[in-house]
Amino acid sequence: MQSPRTLLIACGALGREVVALKDMLGLDQLDITCLPAIWHNHPERIPAGVRSKIRSARGRYDHILVAYADCGTGGELDRVLIDEGVDRISGPHCYQFFMGTEEFTQLVEAEPTCFFLTDYLVRHFDRLIIKGLGIDRHPELLAMYFGNYVKLVHIAQIEDARLEAKAEAAAARLGLAHERRYRGYGELAEFMEATRGQE
Image (tube, rainbow, N blue to C red; front, side, top):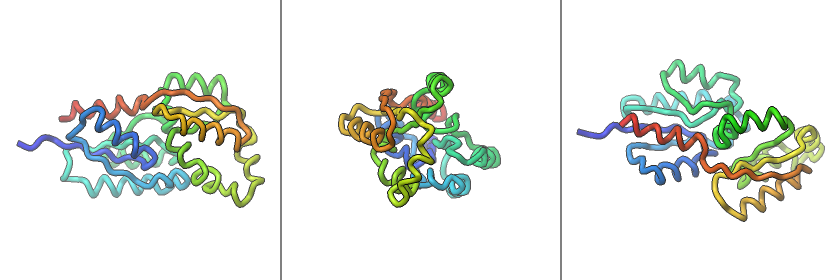
């Protein structure tokens, strides 16, 4: 008898992390497919993209899960998932589930002027933030986007001195103080670990 299989539909910005966790946790029953990470800059594309992935997987998997937070879709992703009967990791964005809901909530309540980066966003800072927001072409946008922030918080998934140096440089580029919080894979690990119960 074939073992039940689960499909995890993930944001491309989580690709490295979900593959690492699959290997670390020995989740052989889990397949992973990702949508383009650049859709963070176009969240209106996410709900339809996730729906398409779900529908193309129907009948081939016993379970389907989504590793996306709301990611700026204004609740539209959740409406799609309710329609399709599919669950996602909880939270409005990956910063929360990487740091942990309780700690993240306390931090943003105490220091609402924090700007957050994950390892993925640190790696691709120039492409996604500087070029993606048009700051390279219109430097005046820097103050418009980041003038109300005080500190850049790097929520680190792995220990990597090069990433830390890039995060410090990103903070300096934005004119912000820098803080690093190593939190590993946070609640994403718990979410993926729970797929064992679906075998």
